[in-house]
Image (cartoon, rainbow, N blue to C red):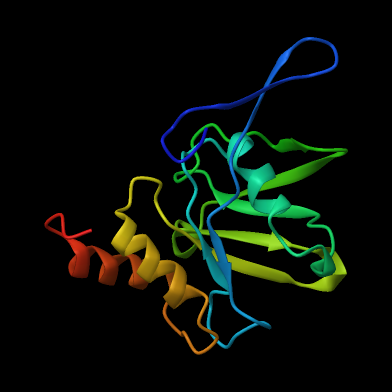
Length: 160
């Protein structure tokens, strides 16, 4: 789907139709930052199997290959345990920890991990822009839940 919700279509060599999400809307803190978050991601829908390849494909290859992601089963209903990426599969672990409801953990194995705020797909552009900038600020010390609460309070009433 593109930003309007229209699928980006293609036809594979065997004649089957393929759909590809547009570039991920993601902002990462330079380095590792000092707070609980290392950036933010604003997916277009709640189907991780569609969104994850775009997110992982947008990351700097110098970071390495993400070996596994951890998401909350409440935020990602019916999430598969593995997601197919070009040339490989990635393990998806589920966490029921409330503090991680609005986050996704990207694990590079021995190279470390980063936790990103997951901005709800339906969030206003103004709130999402603020959340992307704030979560990727290396000095940010706010949790995902606190940031979303602040965005809701600051952007409610359709001002976004």
